[in-house]
Amino acid sequence: MRLKLVIFDVDGTLVDSQGLIIEAMDLAFNGEGLVPPNRADTLSIVGLSLDVAMFKLIPDADVDLRAQLVEGYKQAYMMRRAETGVEQSSPFFEGARDVLKRLRAQEDVLLGVATGKSRRGLDKLIEGHGLEGVFVTTQVADDHPSKPHPSMITTALVETGVAARDAVMIGDTSYDMDMAAAAGVAGIGVGWGYHETSALSAAHHVVEDFAALEGALAQVWENAS
Image 1: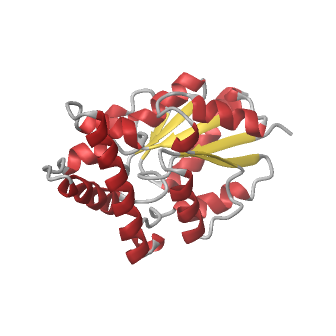
Image 2: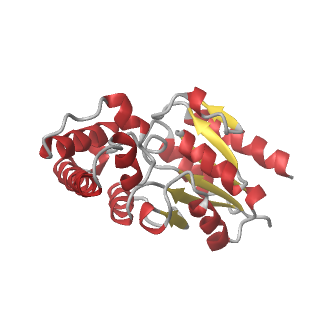
């Protein structure tokens, strides 16, 4: 039996955490007496590691200020998540949980995560949504260069023993699709996330809802056979 691996991005792909992300970013910037970035700019950096994200948002700031913004964002994010709970602050997109359940039931399919979240942040989300044991490999910003560097995917392949041709990366940003291309795996972009679909030029397929995802996966694996 040839194993297949489906790697999911988290924010903007499985869960809609944009409200929490924007609020935390606003609080971080306000805490330093700065005007927060606009909504579009904040959403444009979702998926990047926080240090890279802050550099993109405020490239002229000194290293210490960017570090303070990163810490302020982390604290604000954790505070608001604790106040509202994971299910409210980062709800599943419609159909996401059902697709995870169906894919996990297939004996030749493994599930993984590649996210710009920290290990602590991902663990809290998995716990809050009752996803313990669903993902056999979880790659986070703590352990890798920021997307679109391929390290997260190549590590997931090593951990699972799955060949690159049998792996698929699913995400909503150009960083996800460029990371997939750099790692030599197929990318499926999603149209409900935080980047316009026009930015997902490296994707093999783009789907507009979770109902279309399994069909796109079947096409990728059929072409890889």
